[in-house]
Image 1 (cartoon, rainbow, N blue to C red):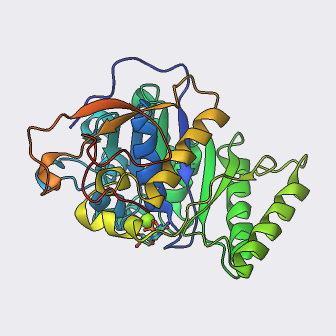
Image 2: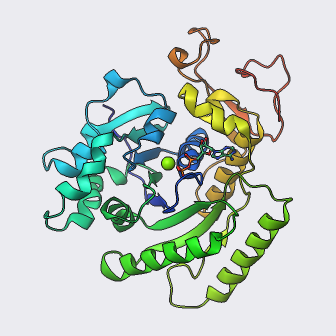
Image 3: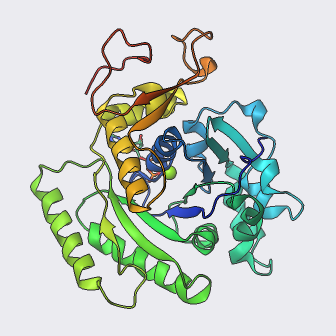
Amino acid sequence: MSSPPNNPKPSSRIIAMLNQKGGVGKTTSTVNLGAALAQFDLKVCLIDLDPQAHLTLHLGIEEDRIKHTVYDLLIDPECTARETLISARPNLDVILSEVDLAGAEMELARTPDRQRLLQRKLEPIASYYDVILVDCPPSLGLLTVNALSVAGEVLVPMQAHFLALQGVGKLLETVGLVCQSVNPDLLVTGILLCMHEGQTTLAKEVVADLEDFFTRSRGQDVPWRDCVLIDPPIRRNVKLAEAPSFGQTIFDYSPWCKGAIDYRRLARNLIKRWNLDVNVQEVISIRPPATTIEAKPASDVDIEIIPVSEEPPAKSDSITTVDSYPV
Ligand code: ADP
Ligand code: MG
């Protein structure tokens, strides 16, 4: 269990990472965008709303630290968000998931106001975070509706694949319905292209179609009227696929690989878009917990501030961690 950070924030952003398709990069983006924002010294909370609990595994939280999960939070009226919070890294807290969550939709079928359970439970802690990212399940059921009721905005991680636009259309329809019923202020603010292979003809065509679609939506009374393709797209990078099996973020695992560079740039661009008062020239370099990295002596410095660059540091630099080189 972890206490939320001390100082309430002037405003906190709650973002649903949403796509009804599995395998498109939702969890990878939630973890690594969250970790990148935390390294820019923002207070970040991640919520795993997927019964597959991939985010939980990705962060490598030891089982004995998990007392309560988001399942308890939703099902048990007495369970509070504070009880479920776990500190995963400096500046990065998490509310974890478990397989039992798969039954929650059925168990909650008769609960009054069941679309707003998460919203009510997060209210006491939300203002302590700059950003809360909710990793949604690959479905459009009650769990997702709970995420959309509490969120201010939706980011859609997706791959530039055949039929991508149809998938996005269906997703936007659902967001539109939720807006009408439980959250009229919800906005779809961005499409995040994941596993992107920008040089392929297919990817170029899909990107052009998406841009055309969103340009035509400008000025219309729809929640995606301001939606943009977020820069940068996240390139396909095998290190991003390897990191979860070590229970590590990409910054723990390989902080200068293409994947880490992309998520760091993404965080920096979002911070600018959101007008947050943060120095994006510096990043807190956070060493992974010694227990999750074999090669690291426990006596290493835990946190140091370093200037952000697009390049890896020189080989002798003390912040270099496991196989940092390069891209
Ligand atoms: P979702 O949460 O939408 O189901 P994931 O984030 O779990 O999708 O990603 C699906 C798979 O693709 C995972 O094995 C993940 O490690 C891998 N993956 C995600 N992003 C990338 C990337 N940019 N490059 C390579 N592999 C990726
Ligand atoms: Mg996932």
